[in-house]
Image (cartoon, rainbow, N blue to C red; front, side, top):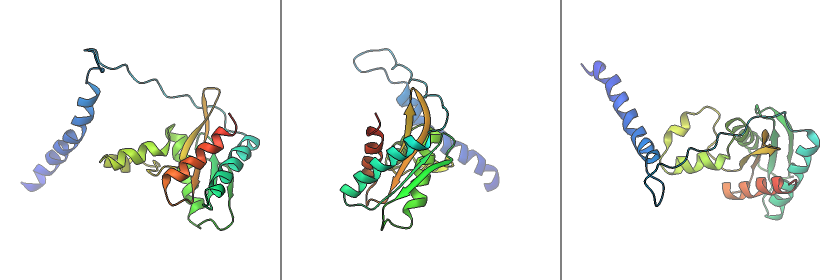
Length: 176
């Protein structure tokens, strides 16, 4: 009897977990009765970022991390998450290299900043953990050129994801 109820219990738990998200999407827009407009479609992928641009972004990101006092690592990946460029400050944690690459790949392949996944997880959205390759730690941002996702940047090494995200954004801002 218990084995027969297990699939039903899993289905009910799954539906209960999805209900708040579905109900939230059907709420009318602020000040009106019409539902909110659908979100814009995600940007399309483009050709992978070139090495010269990747180096400029990485240099600016590492400069910001160093200015803030955090020896860090920065990874720049293409749209498929393949490593294009990597650099690290002297004295960065040994774990920073792998973490920067994971953040960059997550940002590029999911076409959104890893801060999105972190915020969802912190607000109780544990289903995020089931998304293979989604890194729920801020510091990864997609790289957009002419309306296309050409890669991602990931920075790791600071004691907070906010500081990693600040360094990643500084890298992107340097080439705008």
